[in-house]
Image (cartoon, rainbow, N blue to C red):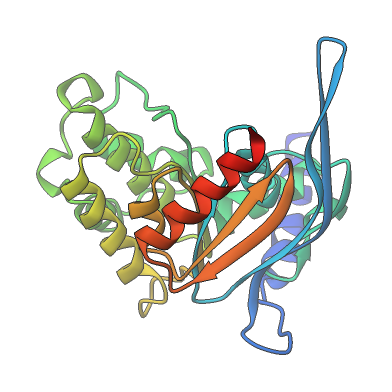
Amino acid sequence: MRGKSSDVDVSTEVRVQEQWEPASGSGRPEAVQITGLTRTYRTGGTEVRALDGVSITFPVGAFTAIMGPSGSGKSTLLQCAAGLDRPDSGRVVVGGTDLTGLDETALTLLRRDHIGFVFQAFNLLPSLTAAQNVELPLRLAGRRPDRDLVARALADVGLADRAGHRPNQLSGGQQQRVAIARALVARPAVLFADEPTGALDATTGRELLTTLRDLLGAPGGGLHSIVMVTHDPVVAAHADRVVFLADGRLVGELTEPTAAQVAARMTGLESDRC
């Protein structure tokens, strides 16, 4: 039975990997395509539609920020796009692969090899060092961690000298940077990040965003697209594009945004809810 399971995993992995090919549309190739996405939750006896027919694309080479009032569906959109949550209807296509058509094994393999995700919570194992936390996804995938790759991931987030420290020896901001290094160590094609700078001071956050931009499309890096949820207009202004959600629907976007433009748009969305 063990050998049979291994054969299934390998064949599925090959099928998913061969399908990683950004789709070409009328403009830039698309790393992620989302069409007609809906997602409904039940809270007690109340039905909440977190996403209501959302259609959007995230092009190759683009850094996109997602913003909106609390409860607008930002995190739900991010999790559905990354394959961490399944929508009720609609399609999510990542690198030419339709996630809605994958079984759990194939979906896990796609996330492991092509998708990075940074959560609001650090989710670090307290007994492991920073380097061991970063290499954990590789070990769970049955790979021998490349020490140089792990060291480079930590250096990318400014923690080259903290590799041997455990989480309780690191500040909250440093722990968040370890979590980001962990998401980057496998060199994903798409990085999804939920409030990645939330625990960082302004200077460190700015440095991290600059690092992410440098990694996007860097030779040999493999990172095609970054999609980030944030509530901070200054953070959002580092993106190429900001898209806005309200009540589970797309309600606008800005390209080459400034912090002032983003703040003004958010103020308008908050006022509309009152």
